[in-house]
Amino acid sequence: MDNMFLWIAIAYVTGSAAVWYLRPNNTVSTIEDTVDKLIKDGYLKTQGTGDSQKILKHTEWCNEND
Image 1 (cartoon, one colour):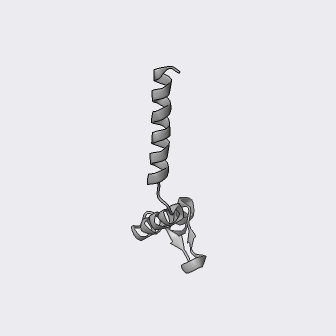
Image 2 (cartoon, one colour):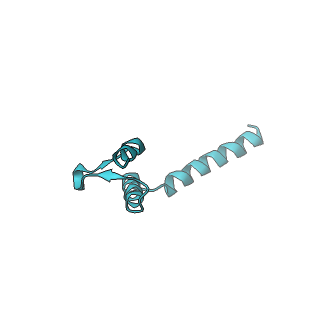
Image 3 (cartoon, one colour):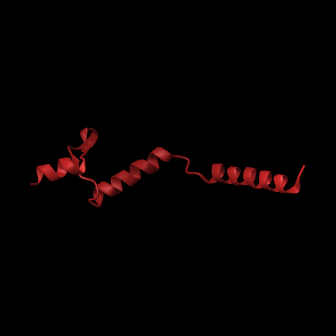
Protein backbone atom coordinates (compact mmCIF):
# COMPACT_ATOMS: atom_id res chain seq x y z
CA MET A 1 0.00 0.00 0.00
CA ASP A 2 1.07 3.52 -0.69
CA ASN A 3 2.06 5.48 2.45
CA MET A 4 -0.06 8.47 1.38
CA PHE A 5 -3.19 6.30 1.04
CA LEU A 6 -2.57 4.73 4.45
CA TRP A 7 -2.07 8.14 6.07
CA ILE A 8 -5.31 9.50 4.53
CA ALA A 9 -7.26 6.39 5.56
CA ILE A 10 -6.05 6.63 9.17
CA ALA A 11 -6.85 10.37 9.29
CA TYR A 12 -10.34 9.73 7.87
CA VAL A 13 -11.14 6.96 10.35
CA THR A 14 -9.76 8.98 13.29
CA GLY A 15 -11.71 12.10 12.29
CA SER A 16 -14.93 10.14 11.78
CA ALA A 17 -14.56 8.48 15.19
CA ALA A 18 -13.93 11.84 16.88
CA VAL A 19 -17.00 13.44 15.29
CA TRP A 20 -19.18 10.47 16.25
CA TYR A 21 -17.89 10.56 19.83
CA LEU A 22 -18.15 14.35 20.29
CA ARG A 23 -21.52 14.94 18.59
CA PRO A 24 -24.42 16.07 20.78
CA ASN A 25 -26.31 13.06 22.12
CA ASN A 26 -29.71 14.70 22.07
CA THR A 27 -30.07 16.73 18.88
CA VAL A 28 -33.84 17.25 19.31
CA SER A 29 -33.30 18.86 22.72
CA THR A 30 -30.66 21.17 21.25
CA ILE A 31 -33.04 22.26 18.47
CA GLU A 32 -35.89 22.85 20.94
CA ASP A 33 -33.62 24.93 23.17
CA THR A 34 -32.48 27.01 20.19
CA VAL A 35 -36.04 27.68 18.96
CA ASP A 36 -37.19 28.55 22.50
CA LYS A 37 -34.33 31.05 22.85
CA LEU A 38 -35.10 32.63 19.45
CA ILE A 39 -38.75 33.07 20.53
CA LYS A 40 -37.74 34.48 23.91
CA ASP A 41 -35.31 36.94 22.30
CA GLY A 42 -37.94 38.11 19.81
CA TYR A 43 -36.37 36.75 16.62
CA LEU A 44 -39.33 34.41 16.00
CA LYS A 45 -42.94 35.55 16.33
CA THR A 46 -45.54 33.07 17.55
CA GLN A 47 -49.28 32.75 17.87
CA GLY A 48 -51.03 30.72 20.57
CA THR A 49 -49.58 29.13 23.68
CA GLY A 50 -48.34 25.76 24.88
CA ASP A 51 -48.70 22.80 22.52
CA SER A 52 -50.89 24.81 20.14
CA GLN A 53 -48.20 27.46 19.65
CA LYS A 54 -47.43 28.19 16.00
CA ILE A 55 -44.40 30.00 14.55
CA LEU A 56 -45.57 32.74 12.19
CA LYS A 57 -43.98 33.42 8.82
CA HIS A 58 -42.54 36.90 8.39
CA THR A 59 -45.24 37.81 5.87
CA GLU A 60 -48.01 36.69 8.26
CA TRP A 61 -46.60 38.76 11.10
CA CYS A 62 -46.14 41.85 8.91
CA ASN A 63 -49.68 41.62 7.51
CA GLU A 64 -51.18 41.45 11.01
CA ASN A 65 -49.29 44.55 12.15
CA ASP A 66 -49.89 46.82 9.11
